[in-house]
Length: 316
Image (cartoon, rainbow, N blue to C red; front, side, top):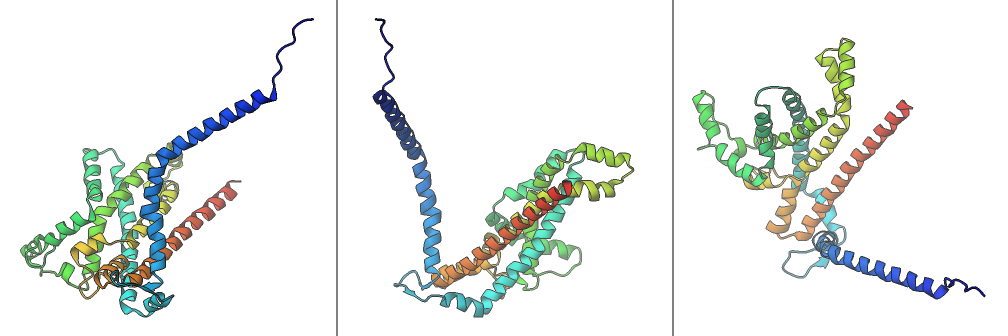
């Protein structure tokens, strides 16, 4: 009789499956060995503090003596605190002034710098450099420039025959001055984003519009701006989130003064937690801010989704 081929037995198949499983386990263990340090850092520096501060917002804690549970009392106190109301008002005013001005100035400068002009690379660099300077350094710089007695700004005004200004020491001027300082640095970010977006404007649309007799104003209104809409939505959301969290510039320049005219929400949180030693009260204010940021982000994303859905429906 001819020899029959060796059959493929079940035990061999099981051994192969077990070998594959062991190999996958070794790969998983190796992968987790590389990922685990980063995961522990993220959990230790973000997840744990978030949970701890949430629990802290329901307690009365001075960071020294043992704390005790107060429930929603911290949040109720916020609704009756005139200093918190003032901080909210200052933050909203700062946001209303800074966000549209930074976006409009960024768009105008981007349109200018998108042309073929001499030394355009130098101009782009000079506009973007202030953005990479830390807010702390900006605050120190402008504290010297805007000093009411020895600052360079008042020296220039005096030489021009104009009266000296209080700038950061005048309650009526301090917040608008901080907005101007923020524009000096924050506009560069909008310029870079808009410059990148302008490179993606379809040239065939521009050429077609020119053939139809469209001028610069019509090109900007009917071709360029609609193309830049997604970028503009992103910048509105980004600049809004940044302005609601402004702190460093206020801390270095005015420390919330004069007369609380520049006290913003984040500075109010820091002041309550680390100056007045009411950490629980400060944590509750922080979660009010976090809720506001979530609402802003969610509203922007929802508006963008609805606009995308409307555009797709119109295209169909």
